[in-house]
Length: 105
Image 1: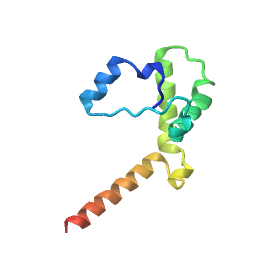
Image 2: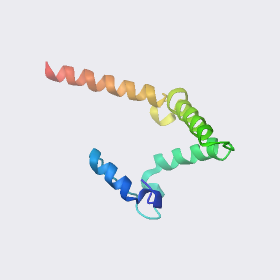
Image 3: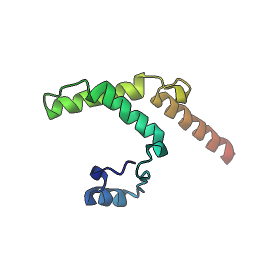
Image 4: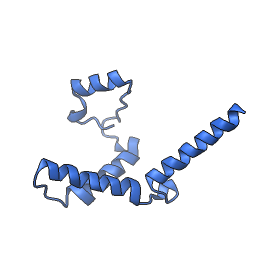
């Protein structure tokens, strides 16, 4: 996670604590610590945020959600063996379930 000021709030700290989430910040000036999120952020910015003039908060939410759905459910990703993130997650879950079932026999 970036060390941006938006992530340094007490509200976020409280929210993560209540849910048992551990925050893991990248080192200052080292975006290569998390290349996947940096790549995602760049794509979101280049393909959605920088090319859309939002008319309202509702418009922004709808546009960003449509982009997110396309990114996760329609668009194949090379690092995921050219599967969509949803397909990849489903395959991983099926493998885990099959592995757990085989282990319990």
